[in-house]
Length: 350
Length: 283
Ligand SMILES: Nc1ncnc2c1ncn2[C@@H]1O[C@H](COP(=O)(O)OP(=O)(O)OP(=O)(O)O)[C@@H](O)[C@H]1O
Ligand SMILES: [Mg+2]
Image (cartoon, rainbow over all chains, first blue to last red; front, side):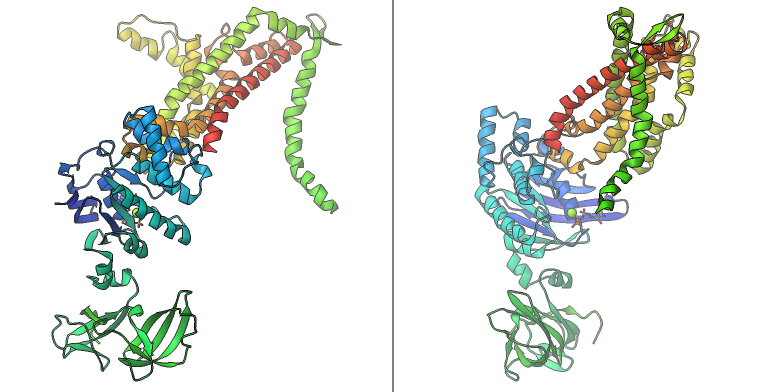
């Protein structure tokens, strides 16, 4: 059993299940993300761990101790709220010292700890500022420092980066990951941003409508999404409906090689391939030919829409400094064998 | 260009005229009146003198009434803060149908005339009123409540409570509930979280509530008039008596101005003391 274990954790509001039978075991020092669309129960899960929402049923165990009915002020977990929830009437140093003060740590030790933690989050020199005089990123770091200073066994982060602009957000992701590694604190982060979840966590928990649908390392999650929902929620995906035939795909009469699957012969099947797995090549030399209908420039990459006999396929290719293709060009598409996967039975037979 | 210069003046004109006509002019006239002499047989004299100011400031009778006014207003403010702040906190924690109902209960008294409410209290507190009857039924000796400072304070608190509860409630509305939750997760007990985190953030609300309550209490007329009786005077009733019974308008004007100045000084000093601290941190 892990360091932090959730056992069939459930929260119901009337007839509505916000979280349903969640089972999760988190190892010591691990960084786990809860990923899912809005309203799927991520915040509810986090707040149950924090003790701010009472579970309807199930258990929360921390290091062998049953936390389920413990009051939030007795749990000793560190929490960073989505809104940061800093104390606006206290300075940065006083905000960070609050948790230590509640633990009756003496003045000298407190000041030393606060100084260390502020250095860790790179806020040295800001001790006497008030939260309203800080930027969004600085506020977030104060919130992290305030949660870390009590040396919590578990750090809970509720969409800590959602209020930041794209650049700061990326910086803070690496900052968070650096802090987490240097303190070795077990961390659970809620996010609805798949890139954030993939980039900094050891494992990603995907939630859908109150249920956990997949728990995996970021790379494996991306490569082997368990459901059609996950494959479209995590990264981009081309989806083509066809039939499983002779150990491969038959999409509108086009035979394509496909990763092995347990589909039975002639089952209507949805096939999926990631846009970045496809490369352009000369017509006739790839798996299929087509015509570019749209070319979108994204800065670091091109996104091409290619009309083929099997349907519309999105292709993404890195920007290498030359204009690769224009709308109207005839191209061939090639991909490594097995990049095309049978995702499951087609919703409607083709 | 010319219209640009005139427009701002035209825009402030209605407000300025209203302010000048209804506040400044009467105030200046009162000031002038307070400087005229007064003679019991011939009335207001055309000469100017500071005699009334000297008389008021050196007479223990007047100073006693000023002191009582200040004491009653301060006590009312304190009691209103002690009742109104928790009341507002409880209100802010209620769910919706109840919150609207209780908000109405708090504001409700404002819809009834102060005079009617003062009469209500005088019936309750009278020597054979409900309160005394209840005390007798419990075997306690009957006490004189009506025409005491206690009666005035009770009735004033009743009238002023909404003016404290509503500003505090408004500042509680602006509070992020996660801030209190954050204090809890950092190990604070619910009471400590309330004291260290919620209370400091509603200081501004309590400050404005206190100023309103203090100002209104210090200048209250109907309640001390009806519940204090003829003997127990406060500043406003004293001014009324000078004008209407003694007919000594200059003396009445002097008292009115002195009370106004004292009130202003107290409120500004209080505002300074509390606001300076709150502003620095809360912005
Ligand atoms: N007090 C409540 N009463 C009733 N339903 C609630 C309550 N709190 C949350 N819910 C519902 O529970 C579900 C899960 O809410 P939760 O806040 O956990 O979502 P989330 O995954 O954090 O979403 P987001 O990404 O938008 O923050 C939502 O559908 C929400 O409407
Ligand atoms: Mg949420």
